[in-house]
Figure 1 (tube, rainbow, N blue to C red):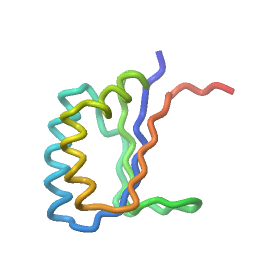
Figure 2: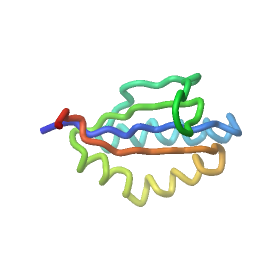
Figure 3: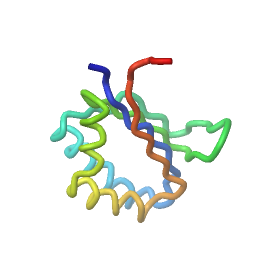
Length: 99
């Protein structure tokens, strides 16, 4: 089965408040079996809208990634992200390569 991924871009507007989100997210992501695969605090979006922070989060499957996003505990935690960032985009995708 192919891995699943969250592709996240955002612009942090309040580093202190966003830090609270990151602390909560770190323990939450471990609890749902995900892991941060890549992170860049100064990413360059060359097409479209995106933030300066880009993160790729890996899950065992796309279904697991979707389930994690829709969990009530993550939705509650995400309120900290929304309050302390702008231009957030989250794409949940299948890691297989099919054409």
